[in-house]
Length: 276
Image (cartoon, rainbow, N blue to C red; front, side, top):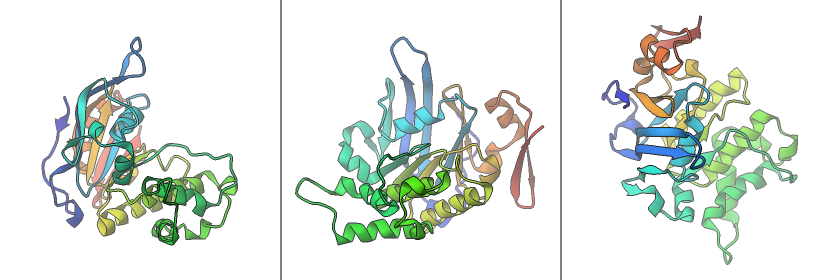
């Protein structure tokens, strides 16, 4: 059972609503009938207009849970709702207009430009009778512009660094014009400078476009004060929920990381985390 550490609302204007946009209730999942569960009764409420993080040790079920929340996997039991409706009741094309998922790694064997890749994010809005038009192209360019990546537009993605490809993947998700972004370790290929930049981009998207975002991350140092919510996962379940300052505490981190000597201290208006 998850420990809700605090019910106090975050200070951001965009996060003022307490209604959950995306919620999970006692969700369970295994990759086969004879295989052990990787998600074991996980529950969470992702509030509308928040920037939230999902943390936990390797193998704790974070990637599986976020794929369940994206509708890419179906839970064996429990329920996931989006805006109050069962996620399974939303047909895939409609779901892709409201929820965008960015995986850990992206690759392409085709020499597409970054802009062409981002333009594929408009596929939920196209049909066999409607192809991308000038409006879609401008939306794709705006997606790159919103994360300061427009300079990559004409470059082949096969020539981009891992970090640049992650930015293109994020822009592709933004081109879907979603209400909710789900990102699985998007900063894994970025250096420290660009990791911090990614968090700033997500914060700006929350504040200016009111996009709700949940990011799987190991970058505990970057959570406070940028994030509104933190969900801590252990052995397939959410074991703590709260603001960064409330979750990033010695006793919680000891539980989440099996007492791996991970420590946290508050100073200068933020939380510092390190491993002894």
